[in-house]
Image (cartoon, rainbow, N blue to C red; front, side, top):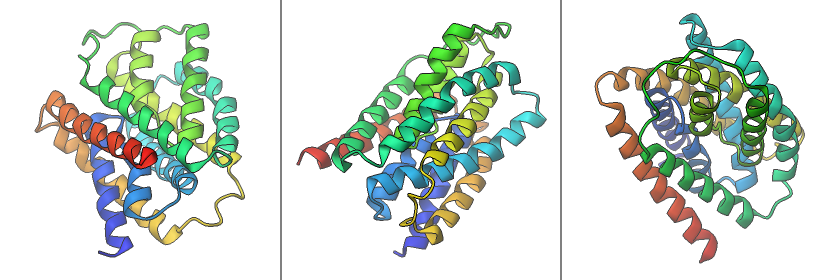
Length: 249
């Protein structure tokens, strides 16, 4: 199977997960780039940031039209993550490949466990900005995004709901603003380090992910969110285990 076909399939699956679950799908981008398309871990995290930025910005536009973005809260959260994302993005290229892969596997496993936990209360509390908590959570998310090339929606959405008190719909939309800003900051730190990237693979991968996200939204109306989360979390846990074994063996 050619790299182009693999990129299209992987992008569509990841976009489908993003659209259906509102976050977490981008965690599969790095292992797909490494194990299906032959990217080195550092190049895979950079390529993932490109894919995540484009997909998140597109989805952000759709959520903005629906009025589901809390701009003040999101801006504060995102601003706190810019410097950590930039610094972590610069460090990522200097880490040994085994360390980067192991760190990613741990984050993927945590994401899977988080998705298997019962959802937060379905109540819709009023939005309230807590500067200290927003700064702390935003900085942590920025560091993860910059270092590992993941969007962090699986971390941002719970934080925006439980820490900052956003309603779930607004949390999903606002997380896309945070992810887009952090990803751009991390990419800025990696400027000039992407000479080895295969743009003929990244382009189709990104396009398929964007299109898949729209289909994911439609899929979410036909299958319960709990079922989708359990299926995706199981796949994610298996990927994390495979990556850890690959590092150890």
